[in-house]
Length: 162
Image 1 (tube, helix red, strand yellow):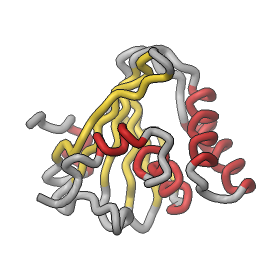
Image 2 (cartoon, rainbow, N blue to C red):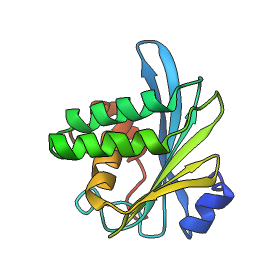
Image 3 (cartoon, rainbow, N blue to C red):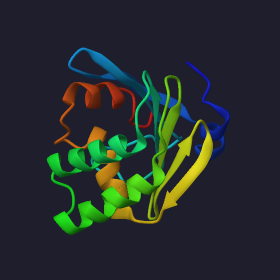
Image 4 (tube, one colour):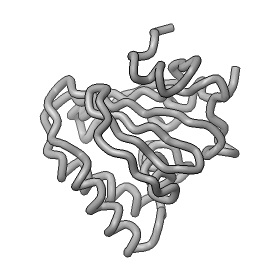
């Protein structure tokens, strides 16, 4: 199995790759995504129980605001939050997410009981101490209501504790 990047190994002791896949829009590949879990793994029946990280490697140049807008739209589609929360979350993501170029890694770490921490190419971008936001954000990929069920399945393939 692949060794985790250094920043993932520091954040998730005993990190292992749980699953991965590509997100495409029509026929365009937008990013490759990997889910990393620690020793406790990830339990779909208790998604807040342990930290995990989603790492997106972009296949093209994208505007940070468009990434934030698409994320907010997906949060709405999975039924997360109310409209005031989603608006606040959209503005928060616009303030955090940078423009990316092909090969950039944008990563999100779920912090149980706290929220989320975001990285660009392994360097901390921001921490969002809002658990509801974190649940909504990671729910884009991991919620049963995800609009990308095949990608969700691929990410969760080996996510449970071994």
